[in-house]
Length: 429
Ligand SMILES: Cc1ncc(COP(=O)(O)O)c(C=O)c1O
Image (cartoon, rainbow, N blue to C red; front, side, top):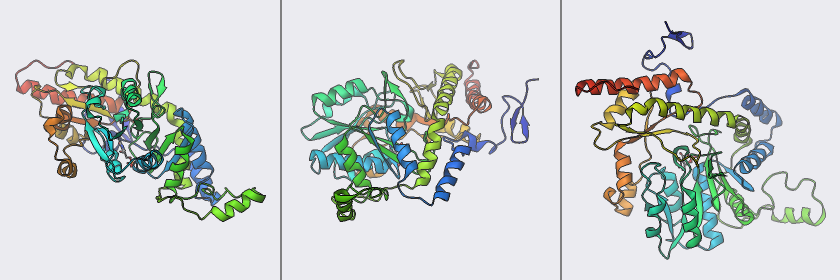
């Protein structure tokens, strides 16, 4: 008999089916690992009594920017806040007007679009590529008008967008690029890391993402002017001469007097998007473990694709070209048209067996967007297909072989049952 799988104190037979609820938290779409390093860093913060913008946030910003081949990072309290100040910064510095247009994909999290709207700009929707679920570069050009100011490639689920044609179009039409990289970190496209293509790139460190700090996000850039404005916007629109309580330390003479005179000056309408040293401390600890996490996620993604291959007549599994990496923040699956599979039935089946799922970020069928923009799903056929047939499961670093085998076993069981009911031969996985 094969060796069993130890789960807490309970040993289960290999490839056996876990009772409902058991291990459910590990088969969720994300995970947080409370490491010793994070614990030590948090204790350091508590003992230092320093909560505001200090050594941990500064280190996290420095190292995160470097890992994404960028000069500056501004840590804020969410990916949404990062996007909010990115568009506000570009609007201010580049002189964009209310109603100017920003191109966004039809599959993304609502925050991408909400932050465009809340900056007084107009999102213009571009359909996505049917294999990658990322903005389709072939669909971009026809959406460009005199009022288009920027393209927002959203690197969905851990997969970089097809950046070469996107950057070519941006150059041709003098458009800015804001990468929404809230779902992707440390991942290359043609040898260049995500976050280093755009004028400003935004990341999220919210739970169920890659690096997790609880709440958190970063706006990353290599443009010093943008960095200055982003930092100010996140701090109530403050004069950048005084952002940290250390900024007047060890200064003398003219500079000291200047800081005293300007440290309570606000130069633009800004926001309170700051984080504390707690988030910075957790972020620094997670950065140390990031290479391992990325390796495990990639391995898990590859394992699922290899083992679910036998179901490809029903399911579209993730695909990415060899010149692109994949962070596998999630594992997306889309039920193929004409396969006879009812997505909801499949989703219910695996959910009942403790495998958490989410819809694949539908956007254009969101009630408020439908009402505002009056678009019809039919105008975006790929998004319509994904909205009706797509879902994702987790493939995070807390999943090991037993969990992956369980996921594969559950899918196979569903399809074996389905094929039996249709009088077909059993699927070999
Ligand atoms: C593509 C995308 N953009 C933006 C965000 C917003 O990030 P946050 O939840 O940190 O505000 C998310 C978060 O899920 C996301 O997936």
